[in-house]
Structure formats: structure tokens, C-alpha cells
Image 1 (cartoon, rainbow, N blue to C red):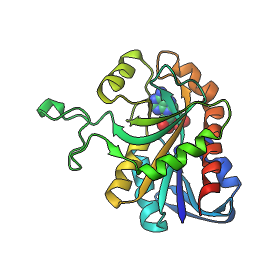
Image 2 (image 1 turned 180 degrees about the horizontal axis):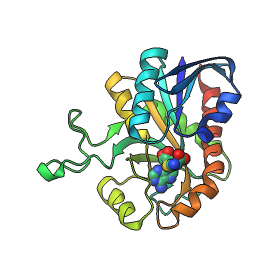
Image 3 (image 1 turned 135 degrees about the horizontal axis):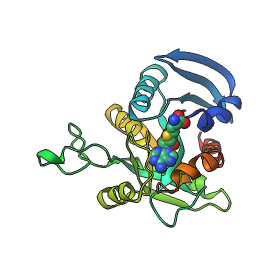
Length: 231
Ligand code: SAH
């Protein structure tokens, strides 16, 4: 079993790459793919860059060139739920693209034309396994549910409420649903893991730089736990 691991920022994958063995690196379209082993398991790890296009390019290339059996996305996100504080974890059971909007011509908000879906589902078995690995971490709440992605840093109550009202999402970030979309098209299992770095409200611009590091590390710890369970 080969696991693909994608993070948007260096801070979200650097420690994983440093811990890898038998590493081989290949750069394609500006993204470096690191193949090798981590905790003795076959992995391919890449930093995709910020936003849905970077994430989609990375996921598609990873699938075509490195054939992972499943892709995990590790990283940080803004909380949309009052119960979820800094450092808590969200494991996706489905992903949505909150900025996909053709409602002006009668479609429901968030409908992904072509897929004809609003929510892209993650495979239940993988979600359960990832959530179990998350629950091993101390002092951390673990929620499973909808993760919302869009090409926007969410930092106002107005935007936050819009995403909650339309999608009932637990957190907002900028890559997960693009990775999910690509995996869905290619019939590859996927799951998004995000640790909360901010509250996606008026304080997010202050919180994000302060907490991005501890949040990124929390998500990496989950990935390491998960890899121990992979056969
Ligand atoms: N120029 C900055 C941009 C960071 S954007 C840089 O290059 O570092 C924020 C990143 O963290 C994205 O990858 C996104 O997935 C995640 N994120 C954390 N909090 C977020 C929020 N409130 N809204 C949207 N994305 C958020």
C-alpha cells in the first residue's frame, strides 16, 4: 500500500520529508514529489502550494506518476465551529467547494457542474481509520464531518456564516476539496486532515501566524500515527 501525502505549505510537510528514508525526489510543474519510506511504509510526499489549482495539479500528477493507493491531505484550517479550538482536529467525511457558485442560473450553491455533486464523499473505512489515529492524540478534540475549501482566506463573520449556513462545514481551508475532486475523478481514496490554526473570524489574521506551527505539527502527528496502522 502506497500513501500519498500532500500539504500546501512547507511547514505542513517538511518534518515528514526530513523523517523519510530511501528518498528520491522528482520535480514536475514546479512541485517536488518525494518518494520513499516513512515509518517503514511506502509514501510519496509533496508540498502543493496554496489554493485549489495548485492542489489539483499536485493530486493529479501524484496519481498519474506515482500511483498512490490513497491520498491524505495534512494541514491547518480556520474553525467554523465554536467547539473546535486552536489545535483541535477535523477529519473529512466529505468535502465541498464553497466558492463554486452557479446559483445565478438556478443551480444550488456549491454544485460542482459535471460531477453534479455539492459534497464529495470520502471512503468511510479510511475516514474511520484516520479518525482513530487522531483520537490517540492527547488533549485534542477530534471532529469528523464536512471540510470546505475555496480560494479565499476566511477571516470575517460574514464569510464564516455563509459557509456554515450553506454547507454546514466544520472548518475552512484552501486545498482539500480540490484534492478530493481529483481523487473522485480518478477513483482514488482520499481523506483531508486539518488542525485548527485560527477561528476564520476577525481575529484570524492575528491567530494564523501565531498558531500555524503548532497546528501543522498536530496534523503531522496524526499522519505519523496513521502510517503505523497501514499494512
Ligand atoms: N501567503 C500565505 C497564504 C496562506 S493561506 C502563504 O503562502 O503562506 C492559509 C493556508 O492555511 C491555506 O493553505 C489554507 O488551506 C489554510 N488556512 C488556515 N486558516 C484558514 C482560513 N481561515 N481560511 C482559509 N484557509 C485557511
